[in-house]
Length: 219
Ligand code: AMP
Image 1 (cartoon, rainbow, N blue to C red):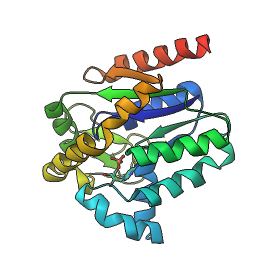
Image 2: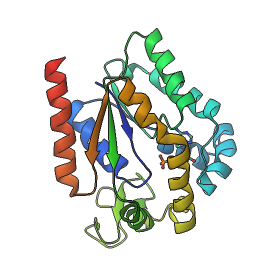
Image 3: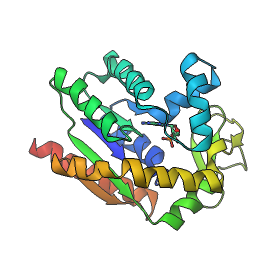
Image 4: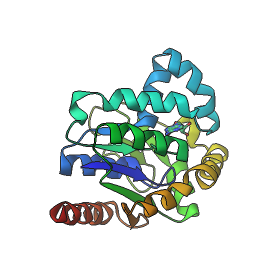
């Protein structure tokens, strides 16, 4: 399965990605995670990307496209992958199409998650992530077993620098102006599945996984 998760920041892409990759045994490729790791390690890419990320702006296409091309070359992507947070512009989508057509392996499905904007702001500003593994929690909706401690590795939970209200509004604005047009792009290619991400996490993942399984059965 070659899959893309598309949707505004805070709609729950990371949480759903974890469940989808477990169900289909494909690697999870999150450009946000790759970039945050580069920033943490102060690599040349990380140093270039940091200022854009802190403001909630998109990192330039060339940088992100190169990162994804390199990652797709890894052996674990041969039988499929889930892209999360990429593509975010038409230029990125076109670059991805050309890489995949060289490999003769087009995208199977694009899962579009949508939710109400106020709900998204609430989710993002209340989000906390593990400082070690990056797992996401929420101060109200998805609490860890012990306050401020990750259930999996006991890392301290922190707030992402770009999860404050001002940056969140900017990230949503960037999504509206630069990324949302990808819905039309993939509708035209007849690969779009839309899922309402406003409900409970478990029922959203069941809906996504069932839809993907029924598509897989048809192919
Ligand atoms: P995310 O974790 O997906 O919300 O991404 C966090 C930040 O990383 C975004 O606000 C952007 O600054 C940057 N970023 C992640 N993916 C991309 C992408 N495909 N294109 C440009 N910037 C990206």
